[in-house]
Amino acid sequence: MPDASGAVSSERLRSLIKRIEKLEEDKAAVGEDLKEVYGEAKGTGFDVKIIRQIVRIRKIEVEKRREQEELLELYKSALGMEE
Image (cartoon, rainbow, N blue to C red):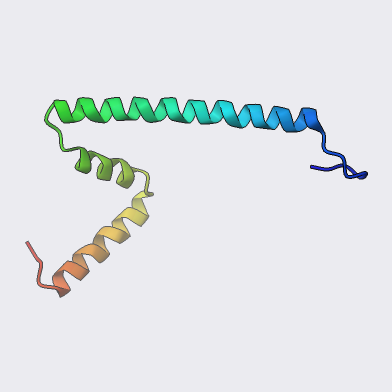
């Protein structure tokens, strides 16, 4: 961010850039780790699409998830998709 005179603090900027680059490297490493784990799951016979759905669902608060499931059932019923 420029100071009052319009100058940019090169040290501050350099520090921010280095932190961002490190986080990007960490993100790439985590992405590779996730790929390996999903590959292991697939190799063991699990359905990776379903595992991804479970992971996404588990992030949702219980009450919100319950509400979504109720709406899903209501919509399926309205469309004649009952099981």
